[in-house]
Structures are given as structure tokens and as C-alpha cells.
Image 1 (cartoon, rainbow over the protein chains, first blue to last red):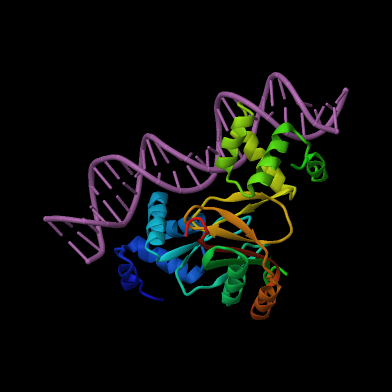
Image 2 (cartoon, protein in one colour):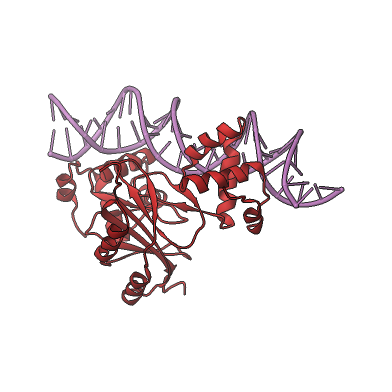
Length: 133
Length: 133
DNA sequence: CTGGGTGCAAAGTATTTGCATGAAC
DNA sequence: GTTCATGCAAATACTTTGCACCCAG
């Protein structure tokens, strides 16, 4: 278990117990929706407010401490900011897994056939995970 | 201008004036958010209901007549279902453009490093469009 | 201390639903 | 004629805001 106190402060976020718990939960679970995160936090803080979850998620995103992952046909999940990576989603159980894929070639290809100045690539692969197969 | 009557029927959708107008709007504009689509439809049908927009968008998605495009840091937009393609989004003006990129190599790469059975790849590239540069 | 975070309640926004009427086929 | 779509209003879901109190630094 990592202590996220310093990590939060580096991102200009006070290290409150709620924020530390959110950080831990994301670290342990990898990716969580607002709803699931709230349910989990309720077990730790029996009177935590959904508003606190939203305020923290939004602030943590603004400060690049976490990131939102938008998934086709599903609710968004959130994850701690890591080095660039893509996502694999199970269409059956919703499980989300990180996968490191080099997208530079893809970006170069896109640059050549468009007039955009491209700087980011967001890839979400869908399929069926091992458990659900 | 295309007449979408037959196209709608092929997808088990009755060809109502509202649906034909939505189809035309998507054809002309390429990608539209619920809000923008509603504003546009209001010009044609002064008493169209937002509920009608939602019901149609949802039904058209279920019947694969249209698809949702989820974009990082922005609202979803919808487009007529076409052959597989990726999207380019301008971070400055929000403009969305189609781009055809072969993702098979990427999918193969992902298959090798994960235990998922992968069947779809969803790619959204971000940058700055020609106008905004 | 002091600024910012928390919980609660209320407000705001987004989306869905039920139902009577009307249109597509 | 029958089925399904539309518009309206109400309901539900989701997210944000305001404020009094409290805690991290």
C-alpha cells in the first residue's frame, strides 16, 4: 500500500482522509465509476457525501492527479494518472484493463492524411475478458 | 441530399418526418451533440420535444442506424453508422472529423499481450484543426 | 490561525417514462 | 385498423452549488 499524502500535495491537493481513501481505492481497483467509488467510500466513511466524491473527482482531474476513461456503451471510470496507455474493456462484465501500446505510428499516419496538428491518441479496445470467455 | 426513408426502414425504424430530419442533419453535419441537434430540429419543427430527440437517438443506436462518439473532455456526438473509422477532435473548437486508419495491427498487438478476445478498437485523436492553428 | 474540505440540503442539468393523441404502413 | 411515434408533463438520474462547520498545514 502506497501513502498518497505526498503525491496529493504535489498536485496541490490537501491530503484529507477522504482523498487518501479515494487514492487507495483507485490504486487497488485500477478503474472505478463514480457510483462504485461512492459505495466503497461509504464503507469507510459512513457519512461521506456524494458531493464530496464529485468535488474531489473534479478537482483531482483538473490537477491531473486522476483521469477519466470514457468507454463505449458504459459509464466513465476514473484512474490514477500514469504514463500513457490504452484500455481494454470487457463487453460482458465491464472489467477494464490497462494495456501499453505504442500509438506513435498511428498518430504519424493520421497526421499525413489530415490537416490537424495531432498530439494525443485515445484508444479503447473492446472484447471479452478471460473470465467471461 | 439522400432520402433516408428506405435506410430507416432497413433498420426497423418507421420513416417519420422527425427521423428523416435527424438523418439529414447528421448527414449534413457529420457529428452532432444532443443539444445542437435539438436546436436545429426546433427550426424545422417548432414544437418538437426533447423527449422525441432522446427516444429517437436511443432507438437509432439500438438499431445500429447511428452511433455515439465519446470524446475526452467533451459531450458525446452522434453520427450515421458508416464503415469503421476513427475520429479527430479539435481541442480548440470541438470540431470532429472522420479519419480512416487501419487498426488491425494495433488489435493484433493487443491480442498478444492480453488474454482478452478483442473485436473492436475505438480511437479518438485530439489536436488542433487547421482553422484553429 | 487560515484556507480549503466536508456534509447536507437545495438547485440545476440531463435523461427517461407514462400517457393521450396522431401518424406510418 | 394496428402499431408505433410524438409531444407534453412528470418523474428520475446525475451533477453542481451554497453554506455552516471542521480540519490540514
